[in-house]
Structures are given as C-alpha cells and as structure tokens.
Length: 168
Image (cartoon, rainbow, N blue to C red; front, top):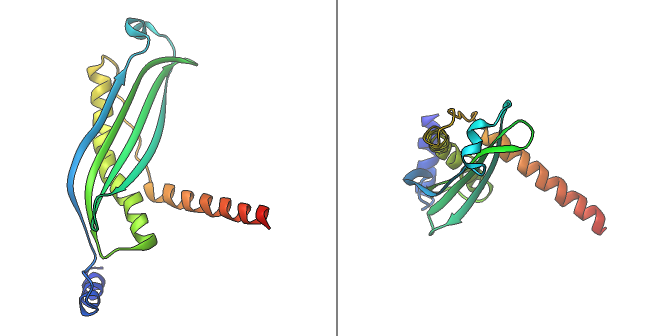
C-alpha cells in the first residue's frame, strides 16, 4: 500500500501537482446543548429507555486546501413511548487539510474519513453530558460512514434518474 502511495506521489510530482495528502489541523466543539424538558420529573419517568439518534454532516470550504467539517449529532432519550428524559446535541467540528484529492474522491474523503475522525469525540461528549446530567451513561454505537456515503450517493442517483424520467 505504501509503495502505491509513493508511486502516486512521485507521478503527481512529475506532473507538477502536489502529492495527495490529508491532515487534521484542529478538532473542536462548535456547539453543545443539553436539555431536560421535564425538569426534575425526568428522574421519576418509568419505562424502558429508547435512544434516538439524528446525524448530519456539514462541509464548508475554508480555502483551497482546508475544509471545516461539522458532525451534528442529536440524541433524544425517551422513557416509554413519548416522554423525553433528555436531549443532547453536539456539533463537533474539525479543520482538515486535503491536498491533491479532487472531485468525487474529495467528496468521499470529506464525507467519510472526516466524520469518522470526529465521531469518537461526539460519543464521549454525549456520554459525559448524560452522566453529568444525572442519567445513566449513553454509549452510541459505531457508525459506518462509508456505507452511509454509498447509500446517499445511490439515493441521489435514483432521485436524479426519476426526475429525468419525469421530465422526459
């Protein structure tokens, strides 16, 4: 694998292009929220906890080689059917340097590798918020960002195809 990278980097250098590279410049919490809508009543709620998770990624170009990727995760813990015990929202961000990667490959790196790097920070923050809020720990399951990306690309293609058929 490293021989392939060396060969690709040498070829890029011969063509006058910068060799492909990826780096983490900074990881930070951009926004954070923890709510207990029922107040003190949340601690007397009965029932099996139901953990819901909403995930979103936002990509912002900072300059030619730097991108800000924000992983937004909202976790809602309900007791029973619809009684919200607590809601935690974390916007974990990172500044990433990407050189020599373009087009669909760049989109894939920004949509998969960057969120994969940010997710452990989100998991720890959500868990810490729950415990500090007086609730049981919440350990979010791992997420396969590669599979989510493939699914999103396939869904976008299917929508484009159906739109093209509707226009024809």
